[in-house]
Length: 108
Image 1 (cartoon, rainbow, N blue to C red):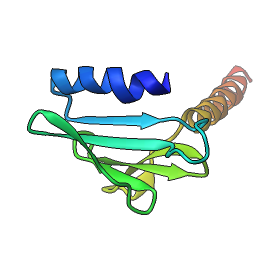
Image 2: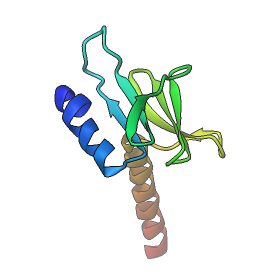
Image 3: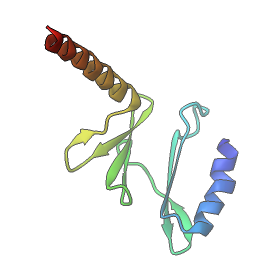
């Protein structure tokens, strides 16, 4: 979908007035950027360059950061990355185990 993302969707989102548009493609060819960023100026998207593998999203109030080949969201207010699905899943499993442990204690 790389071509569709870069042409068709970009034009559509431009016409709809979407303020920011990001394309993340970690499996793209080595000579292509894996993250493209566009911001709407007047009625057209302009390319925004990444600085130190990151870009600030004014819409989200977060930074999009390329880290170890993945895309992470960083909250500049808390100075922390938002948890990704693997981290949330791990946390969920730990909570389930703690609930089970507490249930056993209550049954005694």
